[in-house]
Image (tube, rainbow, N blue to C red; front, side, top):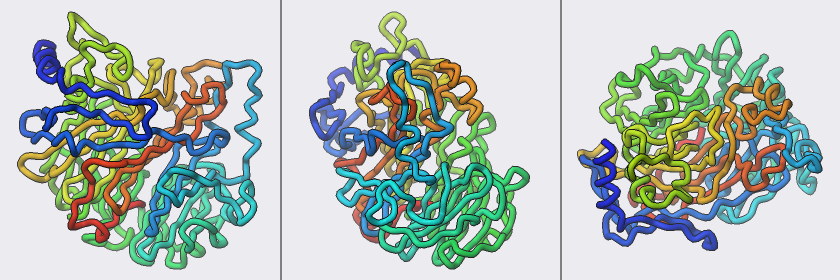
Length: 503
């Protein structure tokens, strides 16, 4: 296998890309007309390789754990993040006081807004009071958005496991209506929103069950519906009107607005793998449902279904495409960025190319029929995130024509510089006990997930936590990247017609 990859590297050496850290746009730009492709796939023309902006820190003071992103009907970008009170890691600089964890606090998760395509961002509080609360829907963590059919944007915030609030905005996220601080109706953990027509849906981990609530007055009053089979994120399928919730490597479906649910419909080939508990299904313009899942952290896959999980005819090994990306990036000769941590034996990677790499918290966003992007935090080497010192980067894999006989796929590095150095603790709030002792194994500043979404022009946008830019800070900060060119995730027919699902 190592000889095969070495031959692939030799064949594609002329296609090695580069990055210009002084440029606003960063791109692997091979000179060949068409990129190499795996058997059964069509090569992507070099002129269509996705082009991305240079990563931007949205805020250099406020915390940015577990950031979520939404795009309004007007094209305004909204990002919200965890204030970091359970994502704290002591600074290695004894002179650094760490006031960034408290000084900007406003008793709510942080919310930022951009009206210029992500070039600049403003923090949202009450009008004229940037540091103040947005309204009465308080909460201190785990934010989540949904954009309703009429353009209303709704937002939930967790109140320290005691309750979750919900508030909505009818002016493009600039101001927020009086919300309901008791929207969850009881104690809960990690909560999610979805919407369809004039109905708003709320579900969460209620510890004893995962039931769903519904509101028709923008979250002011709620009624309980049925029990959701899984405590994961859910979306509405615009084609069928059904609600679809992520369940391990699969989904469950409600055809009656959450009152009753199907059994879990698993991907048959994924018996040993599963989605992260934070995962969300992606639904393309044709109504196909796509899920991404891993086998531990050593394998990354995508599966698609045309009938909401009754059958799964499409399944892709993202890791194989990642190995091709590693070869194209010149990992056989350059042990510096971006392949600084790939291990070599006799000139070839030591790990099997089908499983090379490490895949943490993959997130999927879908556009037109068979077009989607899977984005993850990872490394080129197969390592354990709980013990590996990194550096950690963000990658994305674009799949095009995934329902056709010959799809296209390409993998891109989104962060030329690392977003994190050190282990990634994934043990929830128990990480803090280890972290407070100064042990890097307890570093949970990245939170537990991140998100991407697609705008009305078909371009991908992503946000995640960054600890590497300001490594002495006791919290992470939210980072943002947008697609600036290359192939779109919406085809011409869907531009201005299909709006990708956002909760």
